[in-house]
Image 1 (cartoon, rainbow, N blue to C red):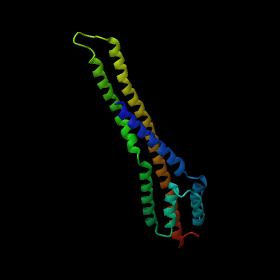
Image 2 (cartoon, rainbow, N blue to C red):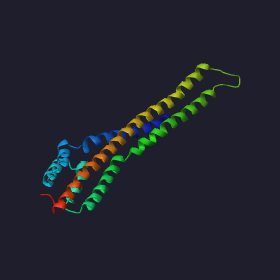
Image 3 (cartoon, helix red, strand yellow):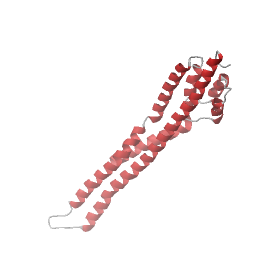
Image 4 (cartoon, helix red, strand yellow):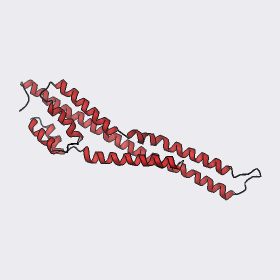
Length: 198
C-alpha cells in the first residue's frame, strides 16, 4: 500500500506547488489599485492605466477589465458580466483542489489497509505449534505500521494545504465582490449624472 500512498503524495505535492505558484504569480492585488477603486472620484482612464500596468494573466486584471470594458452599459448588465467572470476565476482557483480533498480521505485508509495486510502476514508466521520466531513477528508488525504512519502524514499535509488554498480562494472571491460593488456603484453614480464619468 506504500506505492499508492506515494502516488497520492506526489499528486498532492504537484497541486500544492501549482497553487502556490498561481497565487504568487497571478493573484496579486496592488495596493494602489485598491486605493483607486475605493476613491469616490474614480476616473475610468486611471483605472485603465492601472490595469494595463498589471500582468496580462492576473486574475484581478481579468475581473476589472470586464467591468471597465462595459462601464457605459447599465449597472445590472455589468453586474451580471462581472459575476460570471468572478465565477470563472473561482473555478480556475479551485481546479485541482479535489485531489487534495481525496488525498485527505484516501491516504489514511490506504495506510490502514496496508497495516492490516502486514499484520495478517506477520501473524501468519505463527505456526500451528505457537510462536516460532517472535523477532520476525514484531519486526513485521512494526513494518506494517509504517503504512499507517505514512498515510496519516500525507493526509495531514494535504489537509492543511486544502484548507489554506480554500481560504485564499474565498478571500479572492470576497475581495472581487467588494471591489466590484464599488465599481458598480460608480457606474450607477455616472448614470444618475447623465453619462459615464469622464
